[in-house]
Length: 346
Image (cartoon, rainbow, N blue to C red; front, top):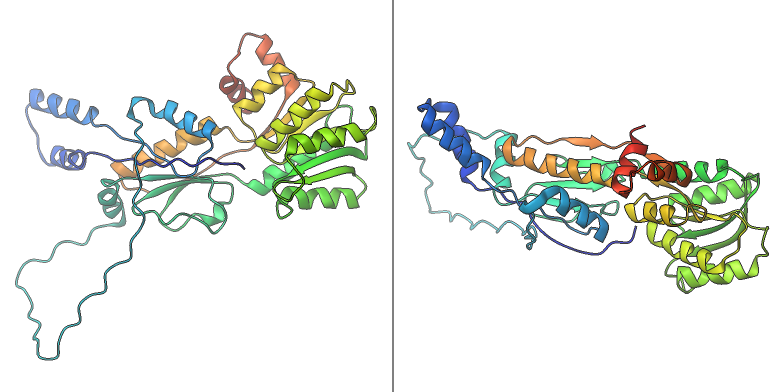
């Protein structure tokens, strides 16, 4: 998944926790209580993210409303080495009452005063070393560290579902004659393609790997389409939205008129917009509702700042076909985000 890079932070006024604690131990008169509640309601939470796509950044900003603020996130620094105690130095104990041990939730709330980082789709084993609490969005649930909140979905299940959608797409017959575009040859999508070719379910008409000297995905697709006679290609598979957009542009420019469409293993509002633009060429997308993912990340961030509780939310994956998109669009629902919501909630 292609990503831009943007960095911001969520912070909460330190007084919010103190006010809440005070309210639990006091019974002020109603007038004072109302003023305190109003004060709590006005406390702002500022949202942030590490490594997000531009579309997802916009989704988070919209969900956060006027509370969004971009700023630098401090990286974790190593603890200083303590000074050694000399042999002749006598350590004396204090008669002061020791501070009570904080629960993990209380520690999380304390740390959240400095900020909660939102981390978007990190690579497996590559969770950024960010100081303080974090909420991670990932398609690899196993990479979420202990005592860290997250929003997850199964990326391997998305890969499998996308190939199943391609294989069972209306008008396709086995073997399905396919052009395929991948980010690399290490991804689950490519391994599934190889298995399906070996099983006789697919006929590989050309395979592209990004960043391997094969040119841009759009130019490669243009050349591949020019070499395949009309009627001898069924579909184009794209591992992510960027590759799907390139394949769509090349297919549109080729003007083949032989029912070839793009199938993508990622779901974005931009791809749904292309389905509306030409539902014959942008055929289907598989993934999760990223608006839901953004809202869930913000909920978990607020939960850390208010209760210190850590949670993991699992998103369901779904497939969206252009015919269904057009059905809803023609009924009067024109916003891609709302179309995705309606289709995935069916």
